[in-house]
Length: 258
Image (cartoon, rainbow, N blue to C red; front, side):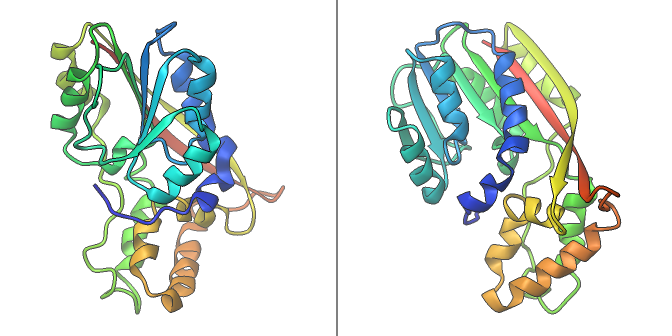
Protein backbone atom coordinates (compact mmCIF):
# COMPACT_ATOMS: atom_id res chain seq x y z
CA UNK A 1 0.00 0.00 0.00
CA UNK A 2 1.29 3.49 -0.85
CA UNK A 3 2.28 5.34 2.32
CA UNK A 4 1.23 8.97 2.59
CA UNK A 5 0.18 11.61 5.07
CA UNK A 6 -3.42 12.46 4.25
CA UNK A 7 -4.64 16.03 4.69
CA UNK A 8 -8.39 15.72 5.38
CA UNK A 9 -8.99 19.45 4.84
CA UNK A 10 -7.41 19.40 1.37
CA UNK A 11 -9.21 16.17 0.46
CA UNK A 12 -12.59 17.61 1.48
CA UNK A 13 -12.18 20.73 -0.68
CA UNK A 14 -13.97 18.79 -3.44
CA UNK A 15 -16.51 17.00 -1.25
CA UNK A 16 -19.41 17.20 -3.71
CA UNK A 17 -17.38 15.83 -6.63
CA UNK A 18 -15.85 13.01 -4.58
CA UNK A 19 -19.18 12.15 -2.95
CA UNK A 20 -21.24 11.66 -6.11
CA UNK A 21 -19.61 8.34 -7.15
CA UNK A 22 -19.99 7.09 -3.58
CA UNK A 23 -23.73 7.78 -3.72
CA UNK A 24 -24.01 6.19 -7.15
CA UNK A 25 -22.37 3.03 -5.82
CA UNK A 26 -24.52 2.94 -2.70
CA UNK A 27 -27.70 3.31 -4.79
CA UNK A 28 -26.92 -0.03 -6.45
CA UNK A 29 -26.26 -2.05 -3.27
CA UNK A 30 -29.00 -4.75 -3.21
CA UNK A 31 -29.36 -4.99 0.58
CA UNK A 32 -32.22 -3.68 2.70
CA UNK A 33 -31.15 -4.29 6.27
CA UNK A 34 -27.60 -5.66 6.64
CA UNK A 35 -26.60 -6.47 10.21
CA UNK A 36 -22.93 -5.60 9.73
CA UNK A 37 -21.43 -2.98 7.39
CA UNK A 38 -17.76 -2.17 6.85
CA UNK A 39 -16.59 1.07 5.25
CA UNK A 40 -13.18 -0.05 4.01
CA UNK A 41 -11.09 3.06 3.43
CA UNK A 42 -13.51 5.31 5.28
CA UNK A 43 -11.34 8.44 5.06
CA UNK A 44 -12.81 11.40 6.99
CA UNK A 45 -16.13 9.63 7.54
CA UNK A 46 -18.30 11.63 5.16
CA UNK A 47 -19.41 8.45 3.38
CA UNK A 48 -19.61 6.53 6.67
CA UNK A 49 -22.23 9.05 7.78
CA UNK A 50 -24.29 8.26 4.67
CA UNK A 51 -23.98 4.53 5.32
CA UNK A 52 -25.28 5.21 8.83
CA UNK A 53 -28.32 6.98 7.38
CA UNK A 54 -28.97 4.24 4.81
CA UNK A 55 -28.56 1.36 7.28
CA UNK A 56 -29.43 2.81 10.72
CA UNK A 57 -29.71 -0.56 12.47
CA UNK A 58 -26.42 -1.96 11.17
CA UNK A 59 -23.27 -2.45 13.19
CA UNK A 60 -20.97 -0.03 11.35
CA UNK A 61 -17.17 -0.25 11.21
CA UNK A 62 -14.84 2.19 9.45
CA UNK A 63 -11.31 1.11 8.52
CA UNK A 64 -8.57 3.44 7.32
CA UNK A 65 -4.79 3.65 7.33
CA UNK A 66 -4.63 7.36 8.21
CA UNK A 67 -4.83 8.48 11.82
CA UNK A 68 -5.69 12.02 10.69
CA UNK A 69 -8.59 10.78 8.60
CA UNK A 70 -9.85 8.56 11.42
CA UNK A 71 -9.84 11.50 13.84
CA UNK A 72 -12.19 13.35 11.47
CA UNK A 73 -14.32 10.22 10.98
CA UNK A 74 -14.80 9.62 14.70
CA UNK A 75 -16.01 13.18 15.13
CA UNK A 76 -18.33 12.90 12.11
CA UNK A 77 -19.94 9.57 13.07
CA UNK A 78 -19.49 8.99 16.81
CA UNK A 79 -21.93 6.09 16.85
CA UNK A 80 -19.74 4.02 14.48
CA UNK A 81 -16.59 2.12 15.42
CA UNK A 82 -13.34 3.02 13.67
CA UNK A 83 -10.01 1.23 13.54
CA UNK A 84 -6.69 1.90 11.87
CA UNK A 85 -5.78 -0.87 9.45
CA UNK A 86 -4.19 -1.87 6.17
CA UNK A 87 -6.75 -2.53 3.41
CA UNK A 88 -4.60 -5.34 2.05
CA UNK A 89 -4.58 -7.38 5.27
CA UNK A 90 -7.71 -6.30 7.16
CA UNK A 91 -10.05 -9.05 8.34
CA UNK A 92 -13.14 -8.76 10.59
CA UNK A 93 -12.60 -9.33 14.29
CA UNK A 94 -16.22 -10.38 14.75
CA UNK A 95 -19.08 -11.80 12.67
CA UNK A 96 -18.68 -11.83 8.90
CA UNK A 97 -19.97 -8.56 7.39
CA UNK A 98 -23.04 -8.41 5.17
CA UNK A 99 -21.58 -5.46 3.25
CA UNK A 100 -18.00 -4.42 2.58
CA UNK A 101 -18.27 -1.00 0.97
CA UNK A 102 -15.15 0.71 -0.38
CA UNK A 103 -15.23 4.07 -2.14
CA UNK A 104 -12.05 5.41 -3.79
CA UNK A 105 -9.69 3.43 -1.57
CA UNK A 106 -8.66 0.03 -2.96
CA UNK A 107 -6.76 1.52 -5.92
CA UNK A 108 -4.08 2.49 -3.37
CA UNK A 109 -3.42 -1.20 -2.76
CA UNK A 110 -1.65 -3.50 -5.20
CA UNK A 111 -2.17 -7.24 -5.56
CA UNK A 112 -5.82 -7.11 -6.60
CA UNK A 113 -5.64 -10.65 -8.00
CA UNK A 114 -5.40 -11.88 -4.40
CA UNK A 115 -7.14 -9.01 -2.59
CA UNK A 116 -10.54 -9.05 -4.28
CA UNK A 117 -11.24 -12.81 -3.95
CA UNK A 118 -10.07 -12.56 -0.33
CA UNK A 119 -12.53 -9.74 0.43
CA UNK A 120 -15.38 -11.74 -1.08
CA UNK A 121 -14.41 -14.71 1.09
CA UNK A 122 -14.84 -12.56 4.22
CA UNK A 123 -18.52 -11.89 3.52
CA UNK A 124 -21.53 -13.51 5.14
CA UNK A 125 -23.30 -15.78 2.58
CA UNK A 126 -25.43 -13.48 0.46
CA UNK A 127 -23.28 -10.52 1.45
CA UNK A 128 -22.05 -7.85 -0.96
CA UNK A 129 -18.68 -6.37 -1.86
CA UNK A 130 -19.26 -2.87 -3.31
CA UNK A 131 -16.24 -1.06 -4.72
CA UNK A 132 -15.60 2.18 -6.59
CA UNK A 133 -12.08 3.03 -7.76
CA UNK A 134 -10.62 5.78 -9.95
CA UNK A 135 -9.24 4.39 -13.21
CA UNK A 136 -7.07 7.37 -14.10
CA UNK A 137 -3.57 5.90 -14.28
CA UNK A 138 -3.21 6.72 -18.02
CA UNK A 139 -4.76 10.20 -17.81
CA UNK A 140 -2.56 13.34 -17.82
CA UNK A 141 -3.68 14.05 -14.24
CA UNK A 142 -1.73 10.99 -13.08
CA UNK A 143 0.85 10.36 -15.78
CA UNK A 144 2.32 13.86 -15.57
CA UNK A 145 3.02 13.43 -11.87
CA UNK A 146 5.76 10.98 -12.76
CA UNK A 147 7.27 13.02 -15.57
CA UNK A 148 7.36 16.21 -13.48
CA UNK A 149 8.86 14.28 -10.55
CA UNK A 150 11.66 12.97 -12.78
CA UNK A 151 12.60 16.37 -14.24
CA UNK A 152 13.70 19.09 -11.85
CA UNK A 153 15.79 19.84 -8.75
CA UNK A 154 13.55 17.46 -6.79
CA UNK A 155 14.28 14.44 -9.02
CA UNK A 156 16.70 12.79 -6.62
CA UNK A 157 14.43 13.34 -3.62
CA UNK A 158 11.53 11.76 -5.54
CA UNK A 159 13.42 8.81 -6.99
CA UNK A 160 11.30 5.68 -6.50
CA UNK A 161 8.22 7.56 -5.27
CA UNK A 162 4.93 6.46 -6.80
CA UNK A 163 1.24 7.09 -6.40
CA UNK A 164 -1.60 4.56 -6.55
CA UNK A 165 -0.78 1.61 -8.86
CA UNK A 166 -2.87 1.03 -12.00
CA UNK A 167 -6.15 -0.80 -11.50
CA UNK A 168 -7.00 -3.79 -13.68
CA UNK A 169 -9.31 -3.71 -16.67
CA UNK A 170 -12.99 -4.54 -16.03
CA UNK A 171 -12.71 -7.92 -17.74
CA UNK A 172 -9.85 -8.89 -15.46
CA UNK A 173 -11.99 -8.28 -12.38
CA UNK A 174 -14.76 -10.33 -13.97
CA UNK A 175 -12.41 -13.27 -14.52
CA UNK A 176 -11.05 -12.96 -10.97
CA UNK A 177 -14.39 -12.86 -9.18
CA UNK A 178 -16.99 -14.66 -11.27
CA UNK A 179 -15.96 -18.16 -10.10
CA UNK A 180 -16.31 -17.06 -6.45
CA UNK A 181 -19.63 -15.19 -6.39
CA UNK A 182 -23.32 -15.75 -7.01
CA UNK A 183 -23.75 -12.48 -8.92
CA UNK A 184 -21.40 -9.85 -10.33
CA UNK A 185 -21.96 -6.42 -11.86
CA UNK A 186 -19.13 -4.25 -13.21
CA UNK A 187 -19.42 -0.90 -14.96
CA UNK A 188 -17.50 2.29 -15.66
CA UNK A 189 -18.56 5.94 -15.55
CA UNK A 190 -16.62 9.00 -16.65
CA UNK A 191 -17.65 12.00 -14.56
CA UNK A 192 -17.06 15.47 -15.93
CA UNK A 193 -16.10 17.31 -12.76
CA UNK A 194 -16.54 21.07 -13.02
CA UNK A 195 -13.80 22.69 -10.94
CA UNK A 196 -13.24 26.32 -10.01
CA UNK A 197 -10.03 28.25 -9.38
CA UNK A 198 -6.85 29.08 -11.24
CA UNK A 199 -5.07 25.86 -10.23
CA UNK A 200 -8.12 23.61 -9.87
CA UNK A 201 -6.60 20.36 -11.13
CA UNK A 202 -3.47 20.87 -9.03
CA UNK A 203 -5.62 21.44 -5.97
CA UNK A 204 -7.63 18.30 -6.75
CA UNK A 205 -4.50 16.17 -7.12
CA UNK A 206 -2.92 17.65 -3.98
CA UNK A 207 -5.72 16.09 -1.94
CA UNK A 208 -5.15 12.60 -3.33
CA UNK A 209 -2.78 11.19 -5.96
CA UNK A 210 -0.10 13.92 -5.71
CA UNK A 211 0.30 13.51 -1.97
CA UNK A 212 3.02 10.82 -1.99
CA UNK A 213 5.26 13.16 -4.00
CA UNK A 214 4.52 16.20 -1.82
CA UNK A 215 5.06 14.20 1.37
CA UNK A 216 8.54 13.09 0.29
CA UNK A 217 9.76 16.59 -0.58
CA UNK A 218 11.27 18.98 1.97
CA UNK A 219 8.90 21.92 2.58
CA UNK A 220 11.06 24.40 0.68
CA UNK A 221 10.76 22.35 -2.55
CA UNK A 222 7.02 21.81 -2.51
CA UNK A 223 5.85 25.17 -3.95
CA UNK A 224 8.13 24.88 -7.01
CA UNK A 225 7.11 21.27 -7.60
CA UNK A 226 3.44 22.17 -7.33
CA UNK A 227 3.93 25.02 -9.77
CA UNK A 228 5.71 22.75 -12.26
CA UNK A 229 2.88 20.23 -12.03
CA UNK A 230 0.25 22.95 -12.49
CA UNK A 231 2.01 24.20 -15.64
CA UNK A 232 2.31 20.65 -17.00
CA UNK A 233 -1.39 19.79 -16.61
CA UNK A 234 -2.80 23.17 -17.66
CA UNK A 235 -2.75 22.48 -21.45
CA UNK A 236 -4.63 19.21 -20.87
CA UNK A 237 -7.25 20.77 -18.58
CA UNK A 238 -7.59 24.41 -19.70
CA UNK A 239 -9.85 26.91 -18.01
CA UNK A 240 -12.99 27.54 -20.01
CA UNK A 241 -14.40 30.91 -21.02
CA UNK A 242 -16.57 30.94 -17.89
CA UNK A 243 -13.54 30.37 -15.63
CA UNK A 244 -14.25 26.72 -14.83
CA UNK A 245 -12.00 23.74 -15.51
CA UNK A 246 -13.43 20.43 -16.72
CA UNK A 247 -11.81 17.29 -15.33
CA UNK A 248 -12.98 14.07 -17.02
CA UNK A 249 -12.62 11.38 -14.37
CA UNK A 250 -13.04 7.69 -15.17
CA UNK A 251 -14.21 5.43 -12.34
CA UNK A 252 -14.71 1.68 -12.14
CA UNK A 253 -17.61 0.18 -10.13
CA UNK A 254 -17.99 -3.38 -8.91
CA UNK A 255 -20.77 -5.20 -7.06
CA UNK A 256 -20.14 -8.82 -6.10
CA UNK A 257 -22.67 -10.93 -4.16
CA UNK A 258 -21.35 -13.92 -2.26
